Image (cartoon, rainbow, N blue to C red):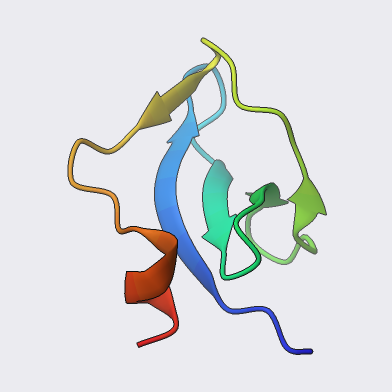
Amino acid sequence: MTNVFAAIGQHRDDPDRLLLLGTDGLHYVQALPDGEPVPVEVDDAWQVDDDCPRVDEIAG
């Protein structure tokens, strides 16, 4: 199954690390410019956008 991601935030200390939400409902980190998405636990180190999409909105 293909996983689609939405960028929903970034790391507070390293803005080149994006916080992603996958259609599988899990969170991932992706290091720019060419890192692969890797599962991550969300904690206070992450700045999450106020208007981040829900999982059902990502898949369309």
